[in-house]
Amino acid sequence: MAGRWVLLLVSFLLPGILLSEAAKILTIATLGGSHYLLMDRVSQILQDHGHNVTMLHKRGSSIIPDFKEEEKSYQVISWLLPEDYQKEFHKILSFYVKEAYNDRETFENLIKLMEQLGFQCSHLLSRRDIMDSLKNENFDLVIVESLDYCHFLIAEKLGKPFVSVLTTSFANVDFGLPSPSSYVPVFHSLLTDHMDFWGRVKNFLAFFTFSRRQWQVQSMYDNTIREHFPEGSRPVLSQLLLKAELWFVNSDFAFDFARPLLPNTVYVGGLMAKPTKPVPQDLENFIARFGNSGFVLVAMGSMVNITGIQEVLKEMNSAFAHLHQGVIWKCKHSHWPKDVNVAANVKLVDWLPQNDLLAHPSIRLFVNHGGLNSIMEAIQHGVPMVGIPIFGDHPENMVRVEAKKLGVSIKLKELKAETLALKMEQVIEDKRYKSAAVAASVITRSHPLTPAQRLVGWIDHILQTGGAAHLKPYAFQQPWHEQYLLDVFVFLLGLTLGAVWLCGKLLRVVSRWLCGARKLKET
Image 1 (cartoon, rainbow, N blue to C red):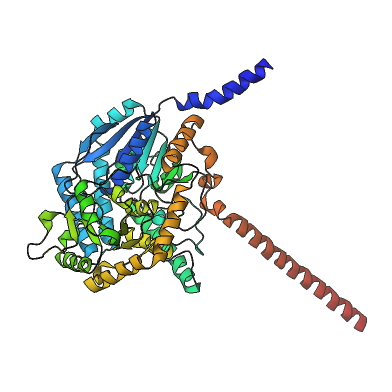
Image 2: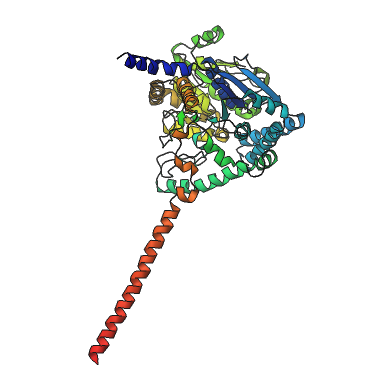
């Protein structure tokens, strides 16, 4: 009996003992903007839960202009690109964004950007001081961000297990999930999960374009792989994606379409949400001026600089002037054109506490660029949206927002004051949008575990179990002809054809025998 109680006590205490062991975790952030912000949040959460976290961070990113980093609770290893690399990258990035503003976002421009990331990766892997320092740390786990494939190569070079965080649209990367074309939209198809016949035709054909483009993007790292990995042990990027122990997806079914997942795929949408605080008094005073009409929040994300497009800025300002609500707009005073008067109901701010304002009881609408972090924050607080998608996954995200009745979108090239004003008034006045946003908020908040708890719990799980081999299907190890049963199909086809041939032979033999017997009777 005593032994039984000891066993029960050990089984109760053992998980706590295991969880109390801090792991050494490396997180990697080579991109700026929302990608960095999410990886920073992941690092902070894991550090706060007792792990020893180090972030490898590239300095000198201009994706967030004038961005000031706060002091971190985790360790940071920073590296800086040579000046010529930086200039070329910023030049290509600026061109890519400018073209997107003018509705000329092309795959060729994206390839040039990814090529630069490949060059940067080669430079980083050749930095013996950094790579040796990382190897000497002997990390237990590496957490990578999926948009820059260099992160996967760093983890492979260190020979450590790794977990991937998907910061962009779900369909942006193929990492082995079952994706039936009948109801899972392919990236850039701009389809929903409700497809008619022609929608399914379009989606099926889009799959081949997506696959070819994935291969082209990944090939931008081929020279880096040849340069830094010996022949015979060179990784294939498409296979490295399948090697991830876990995939954390910055989304939620309150926003995304339901689709098949594998056991090592975990939704953590809402990680950016933090406990809300009272908004600054100057903003509170501004909100109070509009009483029950409330206010509209406008924030176009870290990478989108609308002030660079004077005509768009003027149209937006004119549209806001039509509203009965106050408008708090994150827009730098220094970039505001001198020949334009700010609308009387608009307050321009260089910075704003977005999470706190979204939680404010007087908010009526959130105008944003369709970035995933902004959308997930809006859903968390039940705020309807008007989206102005610019590039990347923004259009895909807004397709989901509209399909879920969480808001509406307007293309940048179609943005006129009257159109934008009508769209905003439509979402504010039609209570169905607010109801859908509140319903989505209930879905995200009613999970048994918070996004942070899911993140930490699954990280602890794979640390305790030595990886996630038990969560990954054997299909990842099968050659493609086995995975798609082509060998079985060929075998059965051959068997069927052989049986048909044999039956034909037998029929001919029987036919000849019958003909021969008939001739004998006639003679």
